[in-house]
Length: 205
Image: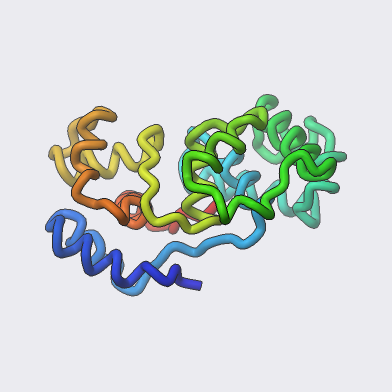
């Protein structure tokens, strides 16, 4: 389901930023597809750390086939060697298992996250091993559908900004943050469209 703020965000971003407006026009009718399951969103975010969208999807597909059902109970019992056979690194396999155990024993409880602001959710999530700020930000975008997240550690975002705003040159975090000021309060939406400008496969977590 399309986020309720999506159409308004697209109109306002197109009006304030011609570069972004062209990207939005090129992908008219497309939108973020959120996942309702917090566990699936977090696992997919861990899988996608520091690899391309295409590679992450391939690893996820293999993991889903091997597990048959991607649940905390199932992944908490899966061997790390099995996860590695699916394409996860040893470290990522350990992170996924640790996250699954947190869900199983109740030390991670997503039921109250909707009432927290972005930074409070990030603080809670990053207390879990293997979940850094980037992963928490992906969760805010793809599960909680927070509209104004700017993941400055995201390689795809920086590449998209470099391509669109600096003729393909590398963009620093400071430059990226400055460019994105004009996108408030819709930085999540702008980020999503810059991902789409680089990869024909929509980003999903």
